[in-house]
Image 1: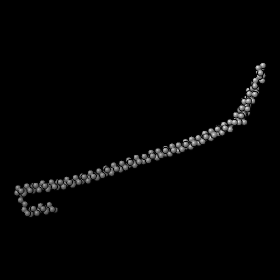
Image 2 (image 1 turned 135 degrees about the vertical axis):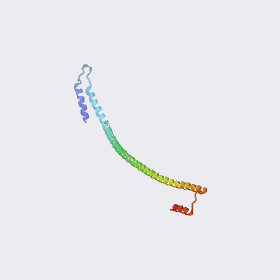
Image 3 (image 1 turned 120 degrees about the vertical axis):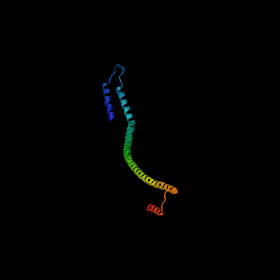
Length: 173
């Protein structure tokens, strides 16, 4: 109804300015044309006004639904992003912890290897010292045996049984 009043308000100045008489040529039909236009506009409004209102109402509803869906998607994307950021932060913290643990384990392994190596070196030194002592005794026995054999073979040494028993007692003691 508002539109009808608006249309009439717009056409009133046209009616006021229009001339009633056009002189000898027969006059104008502005009033009849205006009435015809108003009737046409009213019929057109009557026929398509509900359809246009329904169209724009449906369009408004669909746009509102699309906006709601877009907002929901945006919220879900924001939530997913926040979750991903949180997971990335946790992963970085876990990686830092793993690096720290790995460093400590490497340090402990290096210390263990160093201690094992030191004990192995000490063991090898003791074994070498014992082996050298055994070899030294063996060489001493061989040299003494050779010297004694040479002396007995050459007949340079004459030992009595008492001297021989004393030597054996010293050896045994």
